[in-house]
Length: 256
Length: 214
Image 1 (spheres, rainbow over the protein chains, first blue to last red):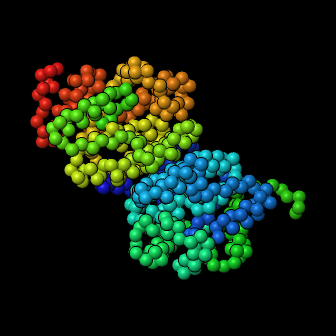
Image 2 (tube, rainbow over the protein chains, first blue to last red; image 1 turned 30 degrees about the vertical axis):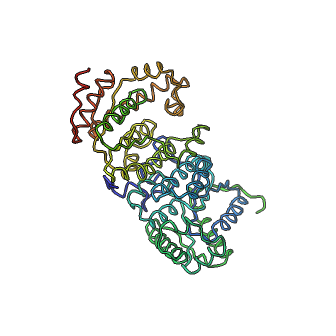
Image 3 (cartoon, rainbow over the protein chains, first blue to last red; image 1 turned 135 degrees about the horizontal axis):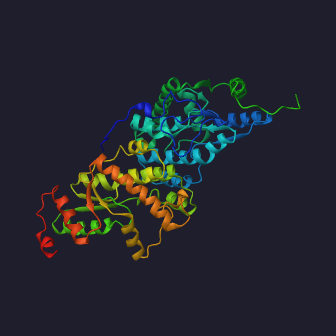
């Protein structure tokens, strides 16, 4: 396989993305300038409690009168059956793996995220393109190519990264749903020992997230702390962001 | 092999394959958007008319990646001649005509193998339409560009959409050095030009029989 051109990295998803705007070339037929909504991504590996935190955030935001929409990774109606099928068969390779997830993201971006931002919702994204960049990075997919691919993504207003250490991560994943073939990197054949392969994969993933945390300016939270402590910190930072002059106004609350 | 619907490229490809096989060349054929992997999603999307230009583009890139790794690279490694009915240029032309960023789609396909020869069967839109009508081909939703809402009338939509695709192909001819075959001529004339182009890349005696019979 030959790579004919290596485009400059600035043309893809990178830390210079302006919140609420496309990272790069974007989708020319969908102008997203000055949309009132806000995009908040909660990133992190398996077992860091993303969905618990998002459910609590949603409740808190809605009580204040904000419209909230949740979106996840691999949940589009279009792609779910295909991704499931591809995972269950052995024909998936790293390139098609990356492209299937990108297709899924494009579908959700156009049909859920962009309309919600246009209508002034706060979009809480359970994982975002960083999950895809990390998984592809671990699999050795060309970095510049992969970032160009996601150049049509929208830079979030806030990215929270729920971070845990390798040991805690491994224990939590084993406790919750065990070692999923793909998301444990079994396709990478890192070793004959399933546990060792799983561990090497999780370690490599954490490394990818760490390097992106600096580059993309993630707000890093220690996910080993109690749910309430993490939630309080999330709320504090989100409240400060929403209080900025260009933030969406909440409804006046009679309860106060 | 590149060209819009009704350019006759599939007919030309079949004749070329016959000639190559008769000369003892191992030939492998692969067709645009034919992998089993994305069939389900493409079918769902097309049935519900749910594909956007971006998801349409990405699904075709996924299909291409799958075929590249299973149907294109292995036969090339085995020393076979791979005949591709449409290649990356189809994506460049169609996706751009649908409004996807021209630079983005080129970078998307930068993992592709550069073909030894890319032949473009150029045909005016009227000739293409006449051929499709003569075969009583029912114009398909996406092929006619009906997803773009330029016209509710399939034939009119096809003309508008494929007209834009033709403009993109013209751009590609210069950019990628595609070899152009005038696809208005007789099937035999086109095939003669086509075989001459291919034989420049192969150690193969040019087929004199065809020249004389024409």
